[in-house]
Image (cartoon, rainbow, N blue to C red; front, side):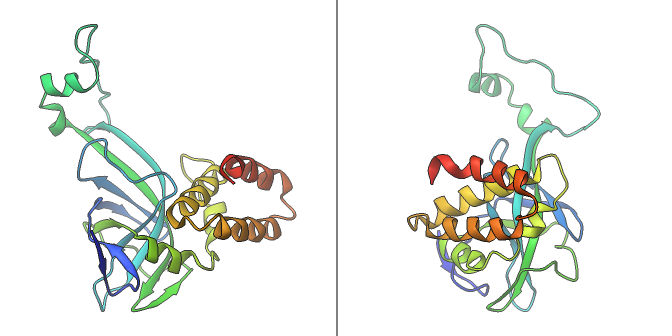
Length: 210
């Protein structure tokens, strides 16, 4: 449900999960619901209640596995029990599995101002992670000076694929006839003029919907 918050613009009060690991450059969060996590490349927010800052980041990876990382999940289904029915027959799975996602921090805000740099402190542990509404996405991404942080991100996903996923996600969220996407692509072309091969990888990944 959309609402106006201290971060400025329209946001949503829906909670996606909770921060379970945090560092200066990013954080990991556990989803509130198994198998339910934000889209790859989505802009998400932690915090937002004044006078505390809001931390903004881009979803960079997601996975579902056992609570005990040293033990792999085992097969529960069969020819006669498949997919959702597995969970109906084994309700205990909801308590021994979890869905987590990682986020690359790309900026923060205090009041109505957005800063496209790393905050002085990491996002707080055990704080809630929220999706960003269209107005909030438009305001934060209006000048995508944070793209170099995504290009240099380290993690399970190639930075080029992370950037492409983010560009496609913002384009779909704004629904502005690809105006923002075209501008962001031009900015990337200038930024990566000496890294042509990486730029082509991103351009090809976003081309189908342009």
